[in-house]
Picture: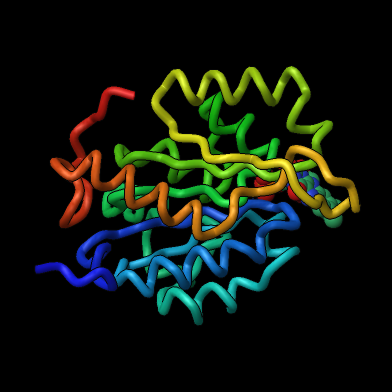
Length: 203
Ligand SMILES: Cc1cc2nc3c(=O)[nH]c(=O)nc-3n(C[C@H](O)[C@H](O)[C@H](O)COP(=O)(O)O)c2cc1C
């Protein structure tokens, strides 16, 4: 019988961190996933690395962190392909307005957006931004596009924002993101378990 603490044993989760204030909360997501026995790999945009050091995520995930696809020091020839193929799930938390736009358009000029395009695993995004950015028609249209393609979206929620305002835009709490990951993986269990099979999912 699977112990509650081993609910993600054998699962490979790639956590994409992008450049918002909530990036520090991604550390709690990584820790929570590790506590459930998942193998966690973190990829970050360069903006995310302005908020939290890749070293934090390396220590918490116990795996190298990729922030630069062209860095010859990374252990992968093509990190987005290698991690995209191994992933059972990609979670982008926090997901900035900028990265949501890239994902919707299929742009792939950083390791997070390139991994999103290179994977056939389910994708969960946790938007976090100011209320104005979130409510902007552009962001809403990109979210619609992603939703239509089967990308799961959690939050944002109404709460305290970095600006000091109580409004929509706060990232869903790490516990809620982990719960959603469990739901997505359990729903997808035919293809999840020992790494992505590479089969194309209908999104
Ligand atoms: C202090 C600060 C906080 C920011 N917070 C957010 C945020 O919470 N959400 C967001 O979408 N953009 C935020 N931005 C803007 C993004 O960092 C910027 O759009 C960046 O290009 C995002 O890059 P990325 O999506 O590649 O990580 C912030 C910028 C600064 C300077």
